[in-house]
Amino acid sequence: MKIRIILSCLALLALAVAASAQKPIPHLEKRGAATQLIVDGKPFLVLGGEADNTATSSLEYMNSVWDKIAKVNVNTVLGAVSWDWIEPQEGKFDWTLVDGMLDGARKHNLRIIIVYFGSWKNGLSSFVPEWVKADQQRFPRARLKNGKPVEVLSTLGEASQQADNKAYTALMHHLREVDSTQRTVLMIQLENEVGLIGDSRDRSAPAEAAFARPVPPELIAYLQKNRLALWPDLRKLWEAAGAKTAGTWQEVFGASAATDEIFMAWNYSHYMEVLAKNGKAEYALPVFSNTWLVQPEDLAPGDYPSGCPEPLTIDIWKAGAPSIDINAPDVHLRNFPDWVARFHRPNNPLFVPESYGDLGGAANAFFGIGEHAGIGYSPFGINNAERWGEAPPRGNAPASTDVSQIPLARAYAILAQMTSLITDAQAKGTIGAAWLTTQIPRKDIALGNYVVNIDINRSRRNPVPALGYAIVVSVGPDEFFIAGRDVQIIFTPNTPGPEIAGLSKVETGKFVDGKWIPGRMVNGDDVVLDYHQAAAAGNNQSGSGLIFGGDGPMIQHVKLYRYR
Ligand code: DGJ
Image (cartoon, rainbow, N blue to C red; front, side, top):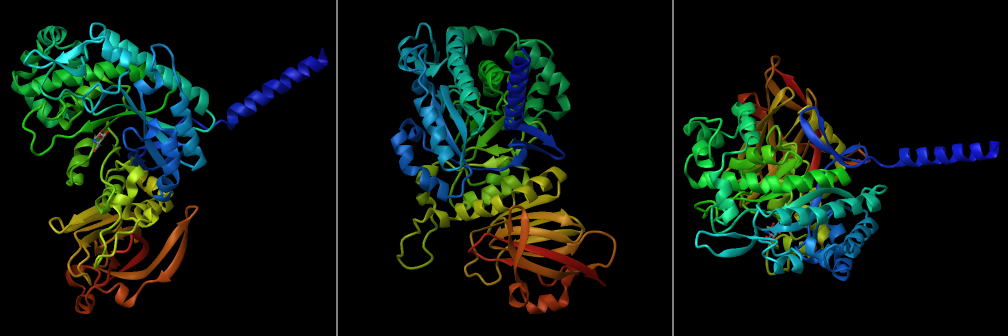
């Protein structure tokens, strides 16, 4: 009897030890000024790359590219899992591709963000299983103004929602079973760039009926509660129509295509909320949506997918899908700073699941993470990263195909070194970043006792580089770590005291396991932009400064002093 009691105590103890050894589930956490992704108990920056849509439908193909992907210094791959691949026959699930993707990632010390192509992928319903495509009675399609159905499931199809919910929750259940120990999967992107293309709203009979009904009270309550914080254009629409607290969609928001878009945003978010919520009940990973942004040539919703969480409709998504943690932008446009500013909001942390992977992508990664407390960055097409090699500097030499040397790989290597410094600074609000071009050549960032004056590097470059970027972390009143490429930086005092700034000490170096290891001591030609200016200390700015060339990025540690 005694032995049995001892044995069961030991078994209980073993269970308790196993449970406590389990890594915590990846989750979002508000830490000071930032909401961060916590992985294995620590803030994590997603240095990501998304694979082409169907790359992960072949394990053989993925096995041929994992090594190359890892060389880009990514720590996370965004890979697709489609409804069709996991439930080719109704009710029969096949996890071969999911398990194979996790296995490939683990062997390369990489994490995964699953991009779930369920009911919609870029507006269309092309990744639903054949048995869904075939049965349009049970899984009704959206219709356009011309009365024709399109290859898009209607958001009003209850059976579609239930079937997608079943597949998605089965996926989350499976992840809980296979990944609760290693936590390879960090987050889920639910669906992909949803929204109706070709019309501003679904004109199927159930959708027309829903459009004629009153706006749901939950949405009205959200508008009322958050009135002052609403996106200004949304608030304007609502107030211009009288800020009504009841009425049809057109009565509440006015009769325009924007109202159709709001209606679609509510319906998509409502459909996806069911999946997000039930999926979290199985396995509570953070969930985000991704948005196909309005392109410059688009005139109206329907030119771009109507109902996607665009800046105008993010509030609608927050009301309709509170279980979706982040509405993320896919920034396939070059004015990255403008777009991320529209998506980073107090209730919407910044994560960029798709964008560029070239030199511009390196600048984007620095900027999103440094200026907007970004959780991470991910260019699209990581399995073909050699395309992002830099143009050869001269002659006809081919661009480097060594992906570890492309601008993005170098930028990720620096961000990886600086992760704990950066995430601490995000929480404290002691970080900023610059993204400069020849059109936007200057940025001033006030941090510590100084304004950090950042210019595109004109010092010894001819022609002036097209792009420069930097991340600036203040670690004390007179001390900074700055990483960047093709920028030149001087400092202006910003607090009472001696009014002229000077460089006290500058060094290059690297972080190893979070510890700074100094390298060269930087001085002379490497800090003097112009010896006349250096001697004159014009405008109280430090005459000398930091110079970051075009072969970086690199990290510099600077201590300043002041004199009068
Ligand atoms: C945006 C989509 O979300 C991706 O799946 C992919 O199709 C890219 N566009 C291609 O650029």
